[in-house]
Image (cartoon, rainbow, N blue to C red; front, side, top):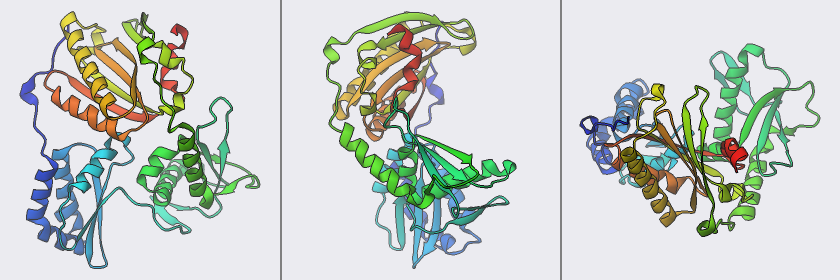
Length: 362
């Protein structure tokens, strides 16, 4: 038994134009609030944040008054799927005297960073990094930040501080997209480590190397692809139906399409472990086909697999880019939100570990 989402609860979001019209109507009061630190949060940031939620979830912002201008920085808080919408919002901004608008927290000038997180003082002095290299995953950037002494109960704060430092050093987008794996490790000496100040140059070199290696590499054999359909069980013993393009998984050049787009369509009660009826299955396939067709018109993307189980259908795409897929998928999902509850995420997975669960069947 499948149930569709009722349309009576759908609230139409505002547009970028609506947001900026509202902003212009209030910009003088906002300008004065930014100039006065005592009023900035209550009279400006709280109001901006509330209005941004009417536009979409996932925005955050920060502000300062600098050299006679009010600066407003919009952020996606490292959430890759929202990056394009931060850029769209700032691109739509009007010119307003005395204001400067920025997409993302920028990279800051290099310095010996030292700042407080809670009661823990973080400093880059004395920190280094090492790279982990695995012949099976040669293009993966796995970084360990090495420290000599951080109290055990401060490690979580130290990792938070480290992310802030990296974001300040690299900029929000680069910080979220360049590093595949990051860890914090303790060593007794720093002899074989690289000073942390050199991490930025190392990452930018690896990025350029990756682009040169894979930018012109495309999968083009879709007409002869082999598709498999099989039945399995979840840990709860519920039936799961998987549909897999085994030809793509056997290709061997996964890093050419490093971004995974995962679309989740909810059609029933997860606790019952039910499968969709035929009519619901057809509707979900229509959404999948629409996303696939629209993606193929604007950016290289491949539909690799889909799992149906426990009241949801999970559809996996692999893409060269994350910006265009995010916009396309979001547009389709908003259009179909009256029929189903649909969510999605986008993340980097150069070696398609997401699909390891299908190896036994391909």
